[in-house]
Length: 550
Image (cartoon, rainbow, N blue to C red; front, side, top):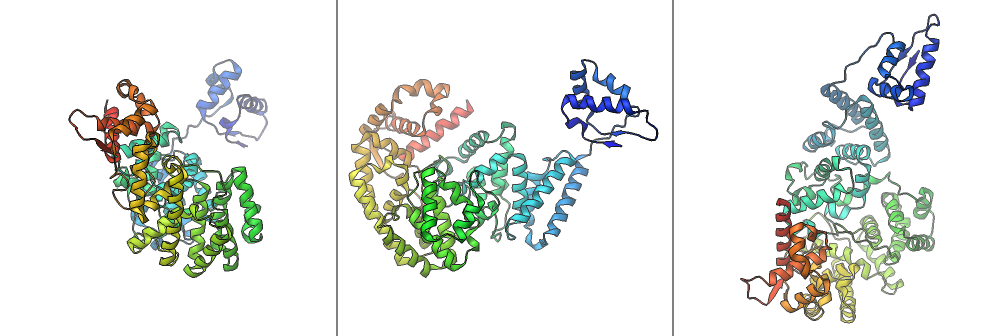
């Protein structure tokens, strides 16, 4: 009789198993084969028996057989043999595999990540389940990497799922991934990920993210992790295919049947009501995320209905969560789906639906369309060389962009848009299409409204923009305005002591930037009356490097 996995039982049940075996040991023609981790079982028996567990085992186990641990080389051979069998069983071909990227995945995700046969079996079972759900064109090597992360650090996969903008370099961007030194970018990324995964796994998790996403690797100085061919059109790091890798992920609290009905059965009004209900409940992002991998299967008639409902839902949600490293608002989730549907429907039909939706919403959806319009302007400017094609006719892109700029100009005259995070994209668009109007507005805010200057300096180092070089950072501000901000933000008195003990870097980032601008404008060797946001950003990066060296 074989009794396996005794070491996985609670302590009292471990004792019961050995008591049972001891009482029945003398039955004729019956032998017991007991399989267990000796150290675990010995400790369990010592605790429940109040005796030496090893001595107790000696009285029960008559012939001990100690099996050697499997070598790392043998374990790797078993792992690769199983992966190869899965590769063939799912009808992948060798030409589907990017050799360079596969070697990188093996190095980061497979080498020394599994230590027992049981772990290998758990992983291969998870990999088979994942491949059976995901679309066939997903890159095998990327699916393997994700399966390892889901097994080892599932919370990191959740983070990756909602940070497409940062990882793929789409709409959102960041101070951390632009003007700062790669070493500072890497330090910020390590600090962020150490709050997501156990610290013991943080360094490996950072390498894993850089291995999967070349943009992050290049921005953090981890270019040795970049291993891909530009022909890998369906890789996870490409914005167009990113969402497909999370096809199987259904966010908590979202009913899959509700999602299927919304896409395949409900008319436009019912779907819009569903979106409005989730917007009011604060679950719009999760509801929309659950749909994104399923819209590619819609027929043209359904795609038109769904697209129009998505457009009319723009701006409904109060769920505006602009994280330091990427925007993850409900509007951006909707825009991702709208882009996918526009690709399916083609420019003419997309333009027709868009104009009808703008009219029906009485212009309400124009403002939330700004990130999409920015990406379309980028595509026009680079002629498609950036890998993104325009989805609307050129004239309509300019017409809609200028309509947004007109509204932004009206709002800017009435209030300080720099204090409102959801307006940052609109300000970027205003700067691109109407630079003179934008400059006049920016200088008025910076030099006349000291409190608004803090937000402006924070916005200055390209935190939210991908539109070319030298964005916004070329603007300068007089010392009086900056000094007023320092006074209002109460950071002047903190500089001397906070910078020496490191607590300065615990202040809000806006305060750090304002303080840096204050110091840059008041250097002893500087007789200028102005300072740029770019100078402030560089000085702050210098402080951070010195703080880490200390």
